[in-house]
Length: 149
Image (cartoon, rainbow, N blue to C red; front, side):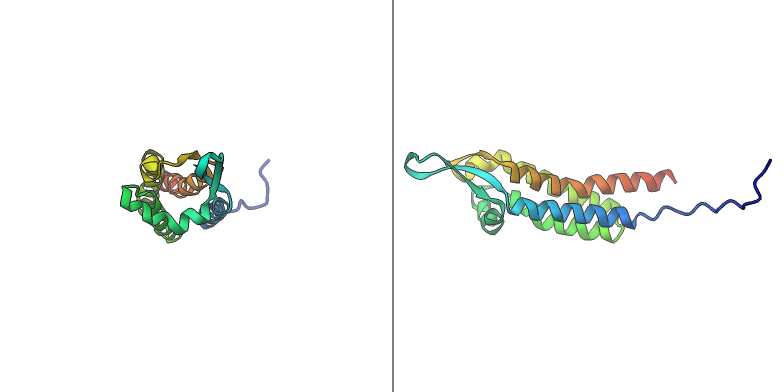
């Protein structure tokens, strides 16, 4: 027996919540990474290892260009990718965010050329990388959903 209640029309999925959530998660991870140890360095005179937090690296990171490390430039590219994602330009957000992720990842390769005292990365670096990856992954998922409809 059929129900007398009329079926509700199917609404289009509003992806603005997903976009805002992705932007918020990316920015949140970015801020968290600024307060966490991101780089492990050797202290002078054999005093052991010390950690450098992300905020300090954000402030001085552009000086690494002198030694060929361009990873710091992932930060402004992330800002552009966030704007593109918020403006519903998924393909542009994917490319800007993907480029930011590759540049950020390249800083691992070039890290030791910047300073011979660098021992490795700490948790803040990986949280920063996660903040870079949120935007292109979200843009890819949203653009895939749009092409299927």
